Length: 468
Ligand SMILES: *Cc1c(COP(=O)(O)O)cnc(C)c1O
Image (cartoon, rainbow, N blue to C red):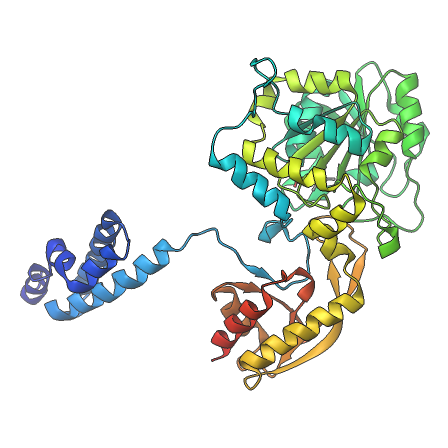
């Protein structure tokens, strides 16, 4: 090795020396854990060593400066939580990448309450004996959906997997070809079926499936008739879907359970708000479906969970299955779910207190007012840096629900952006707090529908910082 390189390497500052520097000491007194600072120093030293070996001339003092600056920056980055709040200005209410449903006040309080200490998660306080964690929501779900029994697992994918495994493993399940749904790439009906050990029997065609198609496919190997809600697409035009009532009647006459994967978990009649193409859970239960599965964090507006309601005897079999233990819901989720379901006991409180439902039912006029307020915030903070105006646009439910319902909205549209809207969108994403926007017609659109009530001024400030 070159003598000079050897010399530079020999004179690198020691970890101890760097730890004694004033700037480093300040980092530690500011609350950055000492082991983290030591690890960052080692890492930075290693990088400098590499640069010197690569032929760069870095004298001792220069190395010291580089390292001290680097560790300050890295310590700051490292201390920020990786999972943190962002402002959703996309207008997509159930944005899967942004955590789907925003929880209600009551749900947040319930989580905090249960997180704080011990709870009666699995204890019957009357007898002091072991109780069931499903007990906390079973009566509520029965009340809201009309079903005899209920249980909850980690998510709806788990609910479907459990249903198929516990009730149809080693046997056949009949599904219409028009309902072989894929949700977000990783949940596909044929694949979940394969995983469960049940055999998929496809019937009908993509656009038409008749009752006789199911009828003809039934054999002694059949364990279940499954209906899957095409939650994220619709088959329109020359189509025929077998009515749930007909499928249930067929199931009854052949002594086969009928299961339905509803996906969204919709409980309210929102036709007055123009939302009418989503089936409700209570409707499926009333029609006699034996097992209905749906998500907790889609249109229900609660935490991530998979809810299973239906015939008591079947629910008992699901609860007793060994897979249930692996798919178990945790206490914080249970707390949030119970609180969310309680809001549904009263239509008005559900509409006003569950953010998902509130966003879904916000009228165009309400959105115009919200957009005007956001525009004002932005003009105050960054009015001179950019052209901003109000425009009409459309929001979406997202999260694989209401695929053909577009909600009329007003947005703040930013144009005349230096470097183009993509560049600004990138800067907004790495801002503090990060802001997620959408781009359309070379404009950056900020949809107030998904911006929470107190986030407007924060959004404007973060935007001004990105432009400044
Ligand atoms: C969303 C969805 C699922 C998956 O639910 P997760 O709660 O995301 O696991 C399964 N089936 C249907 C029809 C869905 O819409």
